[in-house]
Picture (tube, rainbow, N blue to C red):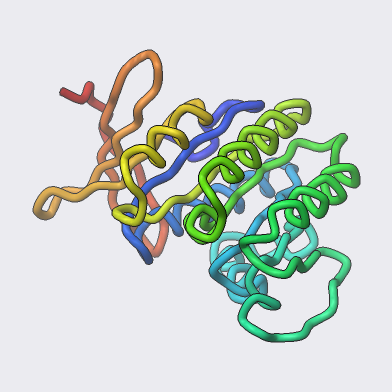
Length: 217
């Protein structure tokens, strides 16, 4: 499995514990997209753009001008920084309209390119807004992205949300990818309408390497 097996005009929900391999997955997904000529839109709600970029650059150094950030974190934690050519800052994860407007602004600039979109992570957005507002925001956001040649990855912290919220998220996306461990074995479980499958993986030199695929029970 390659990370950009996610089809264009589709979305994936990626679930795993905090500070787990799902973050590596997102960074590697971005790096591989850029190598193939895509532009990236990254919505950050729990990290600074500079720190996120440094992690992506461990996979691909020449990525700084290909990633466009919507920064929901810097001003939320009380720091005052101006926007830049590749970073638009909003007041926080609760500012859904600001996030939508900023995202539309970026996408108009890169609409003629292949686009990778990562929301890292959606958990603060979900926890700081009422459920109906989140559903409406994500439904519109994902729907609008499908008019572009884009792939969407939405990261979620495992164990932070109730089943009703998880069901809502799964209903809005095309597939769900769970990062799991059983003893010393690591695997992802992919759930689609067509069924479930498991793919083993290892971490080699800080990168995810996928192994064999099997049908899930």
